[in-house]
Image (cartoon, rainbow, N blue to C red):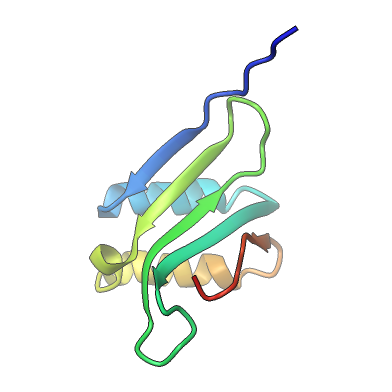
Length: 101
C-alpha cells in the first residue's frame, strides 16, 4: 500500500506583511525548526541569505517560512520582530544542519 506525504506549505517572506505574519504565526509554536543558508556563514565577512523556519507538524498544517535576509535586514520592524522571536527562551529552536553552509 502506497502512502503519500502531506503537502508542505512554503511561504517566501520578502516583504513586511509576509515576514511579520510569519513571525506572528511561528511565535505561537512551542518548537520550530531552523535552517540558515548563505556564503561562509560563521566566518568573517560571511553573508546570511536565507533564514528558513518551519513548524514541526507532520500534517498538512506544516508550514515553512523562507525569509529573504538581504531584502529584510534594513527594515526595522521585521529585524526587531525576528530578533525578539529568536531570543525567546520559551520557544525551542531546533537548528537543522547548523554547520557553516
